Length: 545
Image (tube, rainbow, N blue to C red; front, side, top):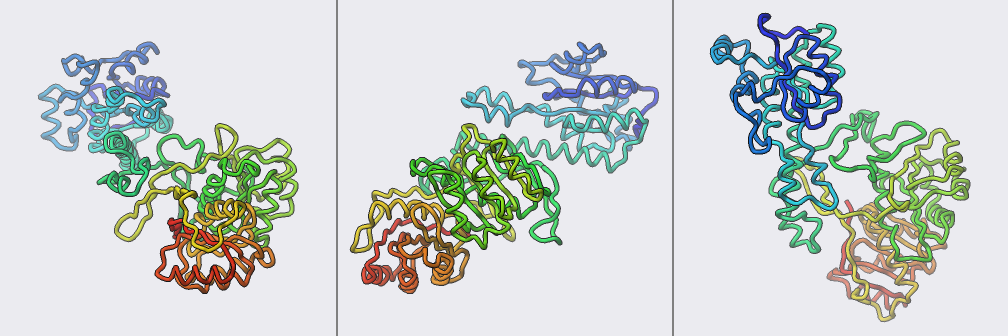
């Protein structure tokens, strides 16, 4: 490799000090073969010597031993002087020569695995976690990246092969390539600092989403939000063909998430596929509980980010048929999720339906072969430790707006059904109460204004995303048709007028569950009583915008 401004009378130096030692021996051998003197520390130096390479300890260069169990090794002018010297500047070159510090022109450094340490179960003691905060490493990385015109900084084993090829081909590393490495270095340290700040905030202040009420949660929102994500891959386009898009991974374990899912069959997942799949998976997880032991199988069908069918069944195929019956027209080109392993009977039942994306924790061999007969279907396996989708865990979610972000906890409401207020003269039956619980879970995942009609534990009509609540009732009733007769209606917010109740009653609805809280609640209650319906107030609004 041609290194600009290098003194041909001096052997060029490379500093190698890595936590992740994958590929480091091959990199060192390539550098050695190309005439570099190797500087190193601790475990990296030991591995290189075991590979038969000659290594100079950093302590020999600094004239100072490593101290405090290796806490201080490279923080010395003999290291950072050569890293920060501007070789295009005559005074800097002269200064290096007077100090007797040869330039360091290649640096390979990656940092202690703080995120992995923070994720350990049971959690590490604080004193052990703090030892995983790298000090010298980030300093080496940032100094090298700042002086990238003269220092090549490698922070990932994935970069080694390309660099070795350039080295062996005696290829000059262009300023564009040097900037690429420098930018990756700053991204590396930014992600590292973000992980440290987030983990220490969680430990010392408390993660907002772990507290039971909104007052405590709000008090624990971080004063500075820092988050990083790694590029997974570019997507074909965004919401529309004129928009660019990409998929990113959160840092940490994503194996049981949508982003970590195994994708098979069909075309690559699109931006809209992932967005819709997220809504589908979120609802299916929320229905995958033990509240309905006689109907443990859940099926959710989503189109354009809104459920068009959701059901629980004693068998999987029963759940699928009930969910599909809710709105078979909208189910064309939909996304479907099951909370347990897909079986052959269900796969055969789905065969005629055009499905964009199918999700499940696993598939029987026969079921997988059957669903993959359709070449345009995308099949996602959502890893689950016990073979059943787990309910959604609380978390913070963010939404970009012009000039900033909106941040909130993402969590279903904790409704104490024993304390929910019966607003009607008639008491809901136990069967109606069970349906209400199911309807509320579905309604919480439907875009506002939202109305959901259910029979038992299956939707029969959904009115999503309307600017008028009464119009949402009309849409849900129209989709339910005769199945609205005897149904239970859930609303994501209160009824501002009695017209929504009138429309529902005319369609055949017999029971209503809603938050309550309107100044016209009494008018709505009177209409419910006039119609002989039952109604429950939960006190929990369920807007989803």
